[in-house]
Structures are given as C-alpha cells and as structure tokens.
Length: 132
Image (cartoon, rainbow, N blue to C red; front, side, top):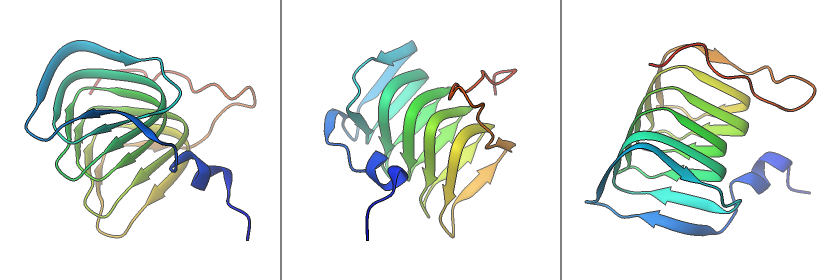
C-alpha cells in the first residue's frame, strides 16, 4: 500500500537536536532548513521552522510554533501552526490554539484550546489572531 503525503512528512531525517537537559531562551528561534528538528529539552520562546518539528516526551516549548509539520509527544504552552500536518502522540499535552491542514490525535493526548483545520486553496495558513 502506498504511503500517504502525511506519513511522508513524519519520516524526514533529523538534522538538528536540542538535547534533554538543555534550555534555550530566545524571543524567536528560526530554522530555515527543510529537514527536521527534534527537541528533547526546553525552548522558551517562539519557534519557526520550514520542515518537521519533533518534540519528544521530554521536550517542552513555552512559546508559539510555526512549522511545516510537527509531531508532539511532549508539552507545548502556546499556539501551533502547521502548514501540512500536526500529530499529537498519546503523551502530548498542548495548551493553546491549533491551526493546521491535517490533525492527528492519538488516544491519551491532552489538548486544551481551539482547533481549525481548514487551509485555503493557495496552501497558506493564516496567522492565529492572538498569542496564547
């Protein structure tokens, strides 16, 4: 059976890792790579990445996220925008609003906020109207 576009989004190789025990304080953390980033530590500030953002069970984000796609197994305190897909794993705990083309939520994931999954025909995801 052929793989779907969403499945392909979550199989990109990881090019950047923020390790467990590390904390990054930044007003805005930007990664223009189209590959992927894994966060095992803590980021305090907004994240903007063109590719895949993978937040592990030990990962925590205190800020807003804009990504091509994201897989979340850790905690987010902020709004999340994904141009392609957002996957909340069973251990995910997200407090904030979500705007994405495709949303996947595993049983056990915690989500507190509002969600919009409509994406305009031109493929752009509009900005959320406010910060969490």
